[in-house]
Image (cartoon, rainbow, N blue to C red; front, side, top):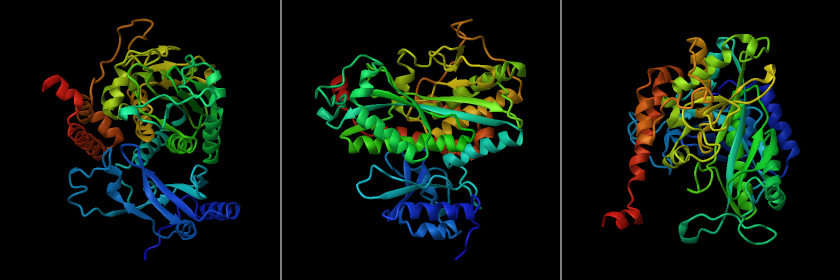
Length: 454
């Protein structure tokens, strides 16, 4: 049996496992988790005693092709993968700092992230490895991102009348949550579940900041602290979604990060605040650094059409981008403190100057969305691109974006620049998988089709 060299410092990882087991002697099992392309966690539940050997370098493997299962777990023919390669295992390693209790489970359980990054054979289409490749290229240039995610989500009733969704019931009145948009009273009325979500997130090591009630019925937003490790920032986003769903279920609700759960209510976005620093910690987007901010924005806008399939990762997400609702990004444009712009520059001092990318839906894969944004910023700085006028200067100065999933996939497929920065094989695998998802989505006749065409 081959023993892999311990990753993440070896001794530190073993110490993390030892201390956790001492602090939580009642926990018998641990879920080892990794995110697939559609944004679902897959993995294994193991006796926690096995972590000692894995942390010491014993092999840890998961099926390579679990990463490319479709939105409902379907196995598709994707090049040589899945149906022709024998479905091989691929090595994984533990991600240090992510071992944590799972407070929403009915019995004491732990969880820990795993990844193929840093192994002898990283999987080029694993989302975390795609982001890792972008981050490593930035660091080789002396560029160091700081990232903060903001995630919107809806609480729903667990009752599904006629298969449709409904707002959660107010714990005090028993009626549907119909309080005015952004009314802070909603935070009080739903405080039990919301604070349990925060507590569960913090138990995962996620640093949360502001919480707010949003425009939609039962819609909330929770923000994360700025993080100088982009991979950890994306880890936080992925783990937060899992924790939120689990806690909501324990409290009698359903939580969803679907981009547009109600046609007549606000969509849910994944807003990413990103700045870039050099080796000395100086903000490269600050005004004194000449055109850094504008060039980073220009690169994001240039790669935005090819990245839409990552930001709007399913058919529902295009309902959000086409809604024209308040504070929803209006295509490929930018502006100063303008929440209707795809890229907003929030007001701040020079040291904190950053861009806020507002295009992605809340159900986008956080690793892939961030990878596309960082690749765009890098492209703009490297090629000294100049952005279009701001939304304030020219309201119509917007980059045209794909309007549906198939157009988005064609645009992504044809982008040599995105292939060069995210990986040629990744783009091929991702677009092929999403086309297969599209065909599977069309594989059922809806009642409307009979109403319209019978």
